[in-house]
Amino acid sequence: MRTNRLSRTRLVASVGAVALAATLASCAPPSTGSTGDSAGGSDATADNATVPDKPSKPVELNILDVAGNLKLTQPMIDEFVEKHPDIISSVTYETGGAPDVTGVVKPQVDSGNLSVDLVLTGNDGLSAGIEQDMWIPIVTDYGDRLSNMDNYLDPAAKMQDLADGYGVVVTYYPSGPLLQYDPAVVTDVPSTPEELLAWAKAHPGKFGYARPANSGPGRTFLMGLPYMLGDKDPKDPENGWDKTWAYLKELGQYVDNYPTGTGQVITNMGDGTWSLIPTTTGWEIEPRTDGRLPNTLEAAHFDSFTWVTDAHYAAIPKGQSADKVSAILLLLQDILTPEQNAKAYDHGYFYPGPAVKGATLDKAPQETQDTINEYVRDWYDDLIESEPQATPLDPAAMVKAFDIWDREVGAGKYDG
Image (cartoon, rainbow, N blue to C red; front, top):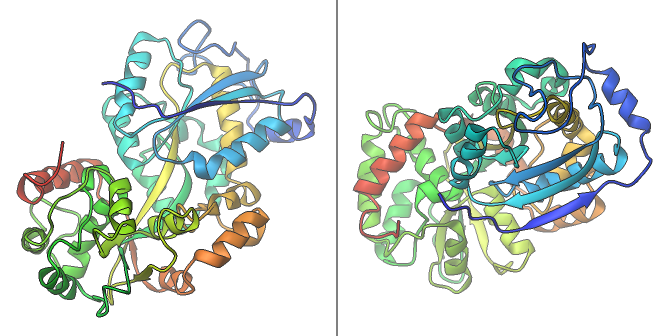
């Protein structure tokens, strides 16, 4: 599979500022040895050697982000590297799409020649890697070095359970489904799926969403409907979603096309092609903060709905050196402190964003605080507290849901 890498940047640690390294290292279990920092088997790997408390020498890390997670975590990583040059000497960042995970990382794992040291991914990329046997079972093998996981928010802990020990939740948000609309066009805002259907019927071509397999808001809308429509089993798209599939087919009569990414949805809202879309907290907030969407757009929620939660994970490819695993564990432990994890508020991209208790907005950078205070709807936090939350479909069920949607709902109206 051809990679879709979008950017590559490098951070080099400053010399000095090592005071916290000893403190971090002392939190880990006693070491029985150490190995070199080369990946891909040139030195002993974490699969067949004891991972030391601290790398025997500073390591270089190449981090691949396929979830847009660096918007949230790069400031955390950069600060750790700056403060701990004795652990991580430099970091290179690369970005791509979730489908790149198996195409890029799997051949490296199979050949024993890793150039990607750490992957930041959503549930989709993590699941694909689990299926391809690509990841170190990091939590299963080294969970005692990640004690800050004990401080997860409850819904983040449930997202962690979905990882089956192969990934570490670093950021979390309740997601949606919500609605975003142009108040100049949508004067009678839908509050139920039935009202949404009636609005789309009365305004054909003015409502839409992206193909769920390629869009977070699209899949959140898809997975949220069974709860609102009262389907038999919201976790079983094949046998328990009769109402959902019937609804989406009827709704599809009034949708002209389904973009293959959320970016086109934002474009359609920005230029007035569409006037009403399903969305998530992050996709509703951030495009207004950066000018992709006008701040005159409004948001709404369904009268009775269930949040379908989401998270980003850190995963380590198999064959990684013991020294690099050691450094990554120390890095992740630091990311999961409230002071660092509060940076995940960012510009609302994954609102709220933090995965751990105590990572409150007042701990975030002032610029972040100012942006959140200006652009976040004043009813979001209350809604997050008041409405029930459910984890997304498990990997196999999600694949089945995407397949059914592609064949029975989107066929002929999307590219791909």
